[in-house]
Amino acid sequence: EAQVTQNPRYLITVTGKKLTVTCSQNMNHEYMSWYRQDPGLGLRQIYYSMNVEVTDKGDVPEGYKVSRKEKRNFPLILESPSPNQTSLYFCASSPSRTPYNSPLHFGNGTRLTVT
Amino acid sequence: GENVEQHPSTLSVQEGDSAVIKCTYSDSASNYFPWYKQELGKRPQLIIDIRSNVGEKKDQRIAVTLNKTAKHFSLHITETQPEDSAVYFCAASIPYSGNTPLVFGKGTRLSVIA
Image (tube, each protein chain N blue to C red):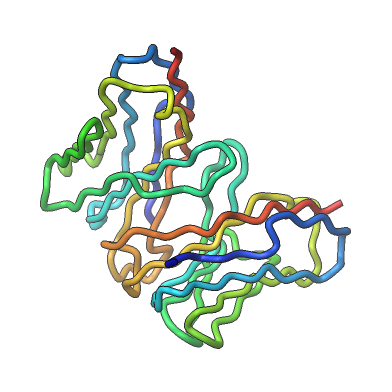
């Protein structure tokens, strides 16, 4: 089944403890992206990648890192999480190099709580 | 960069009535406008999209219209049903912009009252 898989679905951590949220897609998609969703703010892009080893900042990249060593994987890394990073995170992928004419396929989301 | 405004933020309609959600965008170079539906606790999923060379597109009870001159586009849902209750996001995309390639509106929470 074609899908975008995120893990974990739920994560509770403490301030400063490094964490990684994994994202993997099995559709051979070029484009991958991370979004955070907060009430009243919609979906805001954190980072995106148009190809292996190519990553770019989105609108809210501060406090996050990503890597794209393989086409299928795009992990999101929080080196030193803070409470303002408590949010619902979505990974997404698209078959074209930019999502300007192709739909995004979203993962099921990761709800992160930082205390 | 691109900016997308979405209105209203919440919308309640009676079952069977129509619902309209409007979005405006700032960059005239935007040429792809998708709409996503997010049911409670679920991921966003594409329901319809339109490209700038088309003025209107329909898919059963859902339609999207685009006015390039005014830089706004709208989602129309007719004969609403309880299962249409969800948050709807519009988005606008600029090809090869070098910036954030897809910008979302803040969402509209639609409630269909049976």
